[in-house]
Image (cartoon, rainbow, N blue to C red; front, side, top):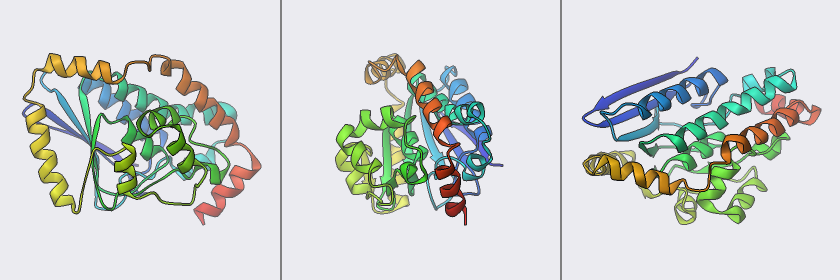
Length: 249
């Protein structure tokens, strides 16, 4: 279930994802998103990618609870969490700048997607939360990309308060969001204006800036999968299984 759609206008590609469960991600949808980012990275006719979700509700609810509940062994768990590692690595390696359109709330892996964008627009409804530790795991895979944006202390503040929403204004102050707006309409107007201007610049210069922005992250090719293995082990615990069932109900 879920869809990934790509539209291209002039030299700007819009990559939109959707899932009926608050735009959450089963592993199959994570793989589709990774594949599309890799394909767009090789498309010489575009210089900017806009990442967005469909609908007026949540931007992204993170990992699919249904699939988490179905994990029965370490290999399955490690492989599932590696899906977010694949997406984050694809975004950081993509030679195109990625602009995030964050119209609503983001949880867990959704916060990781926001942090992996090179620039992001949000609304006053774009609250954020890292709820993983409350279900017996932790935001291990996304920690490097989130900490890179907001710092270790802010990351710790979110992680160790898993039931508390942080406002979009907090996210702006910490550097997760680049700009925030009162309404989606205002966001979209600014996004269109900004992407048109940015895409008019020298694509070679944009590519070099992208490389500079992600300097020092080469070790993520191994680090994120090591982190996925930690989550893959913890998701099998009785604590996590019980917590997931409670959340589901």
